[in-house]
Length: 86
Image (tube, rainbow, N blue to C red; front, side, top):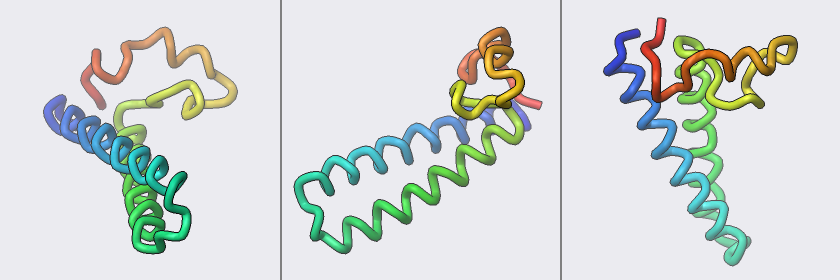
């Protein structure tokens, strides 16, 4: 994966994270809004897929996504915004 593609995918992860968080906050005050709930699940699924795709080529985004046997190794390599992906 080229660096530009990795950056675009990371941008997608950021955007979907924002949408998911916004919808979650909205649902805190409007729990009966079924359209918002459906949108939340849709964007959350899209976010999960984007994270999985990014991590496939570029490694974990956070320690919670790191290999459980090597959780701290992830912090010894460049962070997602500092490196090119394989």
